[in-house]
Length: 278
Length: 285
Image (cartoon, rainbow over all chains, first blue to last red; front, side, top):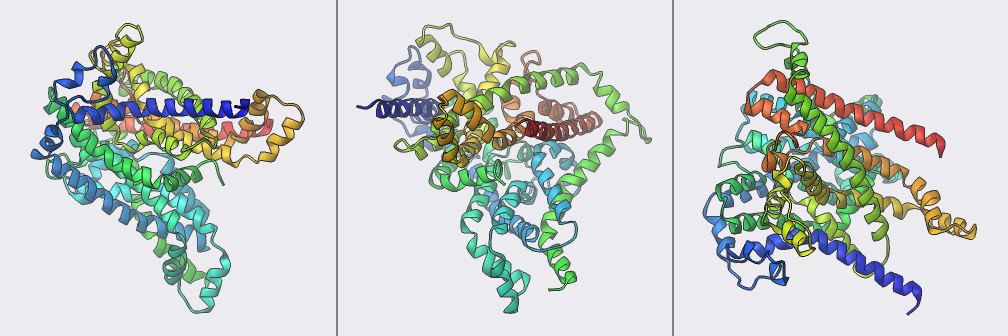
């Protein structure tokens, strides 16, 4: 073996070890969800391979979580996130199109306000916003949950970057053919922007699936509670039943984990192109 | 295409986004400023609410804790993400998969990560089991005033570093190979290559990560609210938790509004300061 290839294998070994270390808490969560409740801590002292590999399997917890209000919370999360992605794409792509393509006065200032709104995270303003949403009677409604997620500065930024890259000739030709702005947006820009739209969708998805402070404030009733909030209260209710807590955690985590693993390429490029590149 | 029709079209396309910027940012910001300037039980404007929070030991403590937290967590996360990015910037088998594994925690709700880590950090939990297996003493972690903030730093870093790594990794991949070839011909060693090519070329993504990371860490809430409620002894009382407590636990909307104004002002300031910092460094390079 040459020194170069030995170094390469060493590097791979380090990478795999670090990845394993990062994955360990998630693996432990998954294993603990599927083993009998009393086995979760029993196999921890002393630490052994059985700490991470269940000797006995049980589906008890994975089935048990669906008996209470957790199913409703997962449904709420999925519904709210789906609508946020669709609504967010509509709002952000139209804004990005105007900012990238149409020439109008104060374009830079409008873009600046949107960038600032991206730099100041939404949570900072959550407390006064709660007062406004109460005024508008949007407590415990899907609208109240969804609204704050649809105007996403990151998604606007990303889509604008992408739209700027589409050659001008295309829209000039379309103008000559008598196409209006909406036609240009709908028939030319959107069909060319599949990957960028997918990236923006992922940003919106991750944001809304994660949301905690806002849903905690705006939708505390069991009917509208989302999974990220339910799990925190779950862990108080089922103090002693760690099996159930881990099972619920696993269900909430597995959805974004699968999505991200499949679409990792789009997420990474979307994330990267919003910072560090011009 | 006349100018007027372009303006009308732009307005139509921008309308939903402008409405949401107004409804979700500007209006609440205006409400917070307004509420913060009216002392409780009064109908004239004044600075009493700010005077009150800046003499409130709880608020002052949370400012201190937040500052200590940021001073530790930002350099730590940036150093780790940079190291990870350098390590992962290679073409070993399945590299995309290994990167994804490190990125996964960021997609999981922070509340879930908090709950899982809360169990792992129990006295009889996973982390102590690992420590004991390595021949070390078990620790109290979240229940110790000396270790709780460090435990929170561990949790939020596990969540975030893969995300920040992604930015730096993209920056690394943008560095032209020819730059490395040039300095290698000049006899540069690996450290010099890093110091004089990699680091200057990463200025943009690193600055971006510094800004975005500071703002994200400034507003950490779910792990605190779920795991420590700011304790023990106020040692993890980050500012977002204090604002939440003022607004919804002790129902003091005036203080909450004043704190929100301070919070937003500080976030704005950080963003502006760090962009300035980036410009002066520009001059040196």
